[in-house]
Image 1 (cartoon, rainbow, N blue to C red):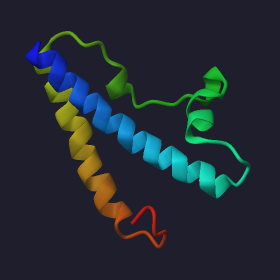
Image 2: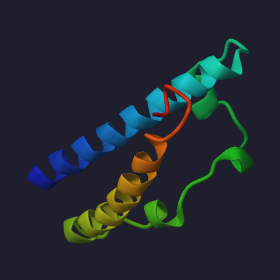
Image 3: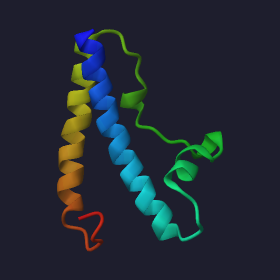
Length: 90
């Protein structure tokens, strides 16, 4: 049960990041679409994922190592975003 709660919290954090970014993208687009529209109302060819996050959940240790590599990428990615001229991204 503890592992399920830990995985749920990680998923909620990532959903929050995605929802925030998609909401800003919808605002910038200016077509009256929402974050929900950008996330779910697109064709299957428009869905893109990093292969790492598509791997099966075999056990908790595997999930945590996969999440470590994802987080290591996020550290570098978000550090670079702080240098952006766009206020939202920085």
